[in-house]
Length: 235
Length: 330
Image 1 (cartoon, one colour):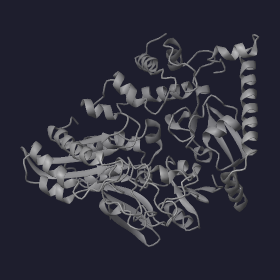
Image 2 (cartoon, chains in turn purple, red; image 1 turned 90 degrees about the horizontal axis):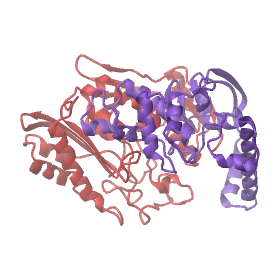
Image 3 (cartoon, chains in turn purple, orange; image 1 turned 90 degrees about the vertical axis):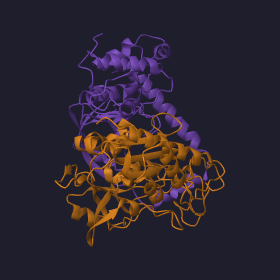
Image 4 (cartoon, chains in turn brown, yellow; image 1 turned 120 degrees about the vertical axis):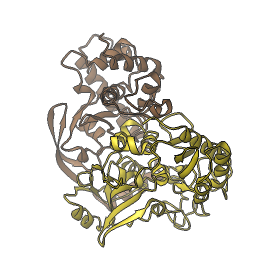
């Protein structure tokens, strides 16, 4: 999806550019801001950076050539540092910036993507370990201009505020619905004694979505969107 | 993160050969290892991806023994029909841990090797951690130790084991099957994880050149009566302050056999033989459960901020045993 979720971006540009232009402008801005931040940081010598420099000198990066299958397309990556997470490969090398970096430690779920149809944290997945798998990101869910039903449900139920966690929330929901159809359990299923094909109650949804944190706390609307999407409510 | 070379082992033998290289580590789901590499706590120079060679099968033999391949992901293990039907305690414990995303990644073998979530261990800004840097001291001892151990700790380390799966495996009396350069061996779960002693840097009795191949569960005894209680600071997606895996085999109202293990209280899943002994042959009553709970935390030693765990553990034990006795729907 290249449509911005935040009107303030449009205000920043003070014109009516196409969605593609907005995307480029935002990326350029974010990257420039990141470089500036890094410059400031390196201006202050710290013990940590001295240690980092020592460590870097001690060993050299290992690189690999690999092919990743993402949203039905093959992407060749050359001389990729083995340390690259799937998330960084998507965002920094392949310009698939829909998947978001929140905590980078598997604690927030903003980076959630589907690997062979299963939701995973792409920040803790090494890109090199994902070779051979079918990866689906938020960019691969819509059919052209037609939103995926889960995307449509999130729009319909206003299931976000800033939108940063939304791609992860949506990918997670797509997998949740499939998992529930298969009759999988959650810890709530044991607490309610519903250990055979449990109903997808709001408590079940909250538990099954607990790997996706929303800093804006749009949780009531996220639960509503998940519930609607799971019930196949068309919007 | 320090640079590392990556290889996918083609066979278990190839993996066992590759692991002999200095600085080599096996990679499973990566949920803990990659995280700790980002923090600079783990610094392998070679990663040997074993997810393509470890078994992802779960099988049951006619004698009732169930074998779980080390490569089975936590979500698949929790939801496998054999496990749900025969070992619901394991399903319940697994689903109480982490998030759906992490459970999809984490493997059975990797979960057994999860390292502590002591913040003084994972944050290299703290110079003192005997587990990370042997001989450096323990920052938790005089630090903020609300989440730390009350049982089996030492002057060197008061960290706890964070796994929910391992607590259930302890109550179920699992056996860990491993393969090394000298062949195969089996390690009872009770002997797999270690107490910290003077070497808290060594979490388990698995040797560095050994690979976990499977986990074996004895014939089911607690399929009808088991429960996993996990007490934590938020209702989901948090590590246990205290957890209890309770399994009962009942003959009427009399306890024929019992499995009881605690999480969040020690450097390993804490199983009390005395508590289990007190349960066996007794009626499944609150009095019996309270007596067992007292025995289970006997010798507990609190630190400045975690004395609450003793009472919390006792009450959680009574609750887990009570709910186990009531029975679960399979």
